[in-house]
Length: 253
Image 1 (tube, helix red, strand yellow):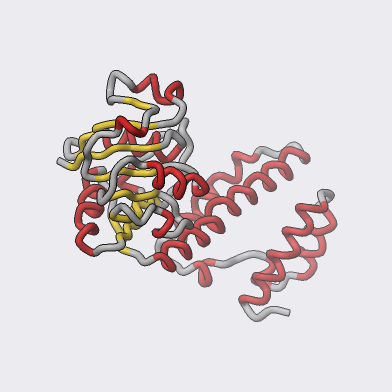
Image 2: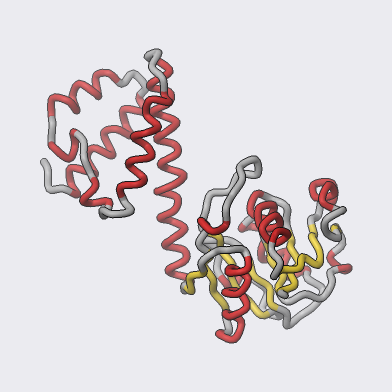
């Protein structure tokens, strides 16, 4: 049984709490947040606190807080030489105060409080300053059904950057597509099978080989027609930028 103290109450913290609580191999000893009101509804399931001085002994302390808060919160912890990890993809391992055993437990997934999440589909990137601390982080990931991946800081930060492209930027493109369909009285839902197939395709093909469309074919007439259709200048700028990128990648002029 791995004992955990969870600090923070955002999207990641909330999903981790649910996963840990459902696991027979994890004991959540305590849940801290500076605003007790946010986590008070869970007090029948776990001890909640807003007092750092009252933190209890545990195997791992997980700082599931905003990137900017990691360093400050770790410095306020009233103990030393315990395993303290953060959940950030882009923040340095060294953001955790040096008086602690430092590590990272980064779930590489998009988190929304209202959406259910199956942690068997969530890879956990683990990192530790001392190799001796890696096995317990791996065991914690396995306890919630996740596959762990040992990474270094450069690899983790590259994965986080790439995640912004495949998730955040892609979602913004969905939003633009939604605006285009709405403006013309078409149903966005008709595009959902295409969205799913595009995602499924990279299970068997590289993104390079999976590329299709007018930019890939260098279909100048279609590209010109699309640009004429676009009334929103932001949409037009994105279309032109991505078209240029695809053409350059695939040797089109």
